[in-house]
Image (spheres, rainbow, N blue to C red):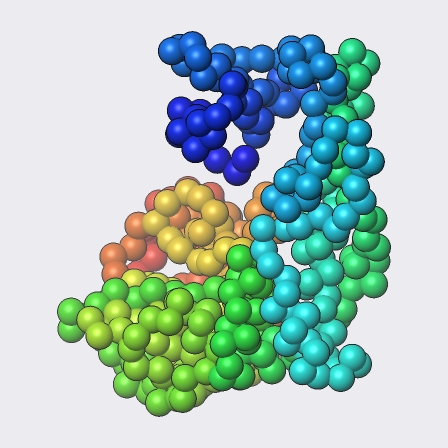
Length: 389
């Protein structure tokens, strides 16, 4: 069972049963997966039973289906004495749309290869989880496993990670899918988002900018440059069929959605598409990057973490690493959470952990001074001269 459903509710459904036995998702040391039972004729709550209790009462080992192998049709088909079934393990994510859209392209097309790779990764994970679930039984005493018959085992799947696609092929493939206008493409995008947040997309996560109250000059400047764009599958990344104006950031080509209440939802670039050096940053609702040629960008980010400020934690640490990189190369990829625990300039850490007021502008010179500062105290960051928009 995928949830801790009430045994009493099950008793109402199976009114002709003498007892209801439910497999729990947790395991007990030396006893295997936890099992609860409810005797219909006895007006007491459910109680814990052992696998040997079940085997003794029903006169045979109890059937066990490993995780990701609990196909209702196969379970209903099972009878005492049935041979162990070898079948494909099923992940909770349906990979069918991935294979279906891949069939719209030739097998060697980068989009087809991208979609099939993700499908293979998902089904392989299901196989691995089912196999590990069965291997858990090896850790238990022999008397436990003799009271169990394994009703199913997973069909072995090759490991797709041994021949992974290059990232540029994945990004090309997903770019193609994101530009489509059919619902099958939207389903594939939803699967990728649920699987890994869209790690293979040509952009990372999304940023929510609250409803405009007219006080943010930097937001107004950025919004004024957005252009209209026809709706396609990439807007599924911003929300499940949210209604609003479909826009595009002309500087990055990334989708932006403006909701009726003027809330802005925007895709975030993994790297900035410019060679103009960093001029300043603006901390206002989000982190903004200004370049020397006057362009304004939302700070780039990776799928597993964005930049924030004002406390000691992951977001400010990622921002410190991002600023360190952008000072040297404006087009460098944004850091991922892999940088956590690695060294960066103490002065930048102190600066990003400071609770700057919204509208604060920090210039390139001030960022370089923070990076070069020898002190690790917060006082250095607070003494930096800043201005508001």
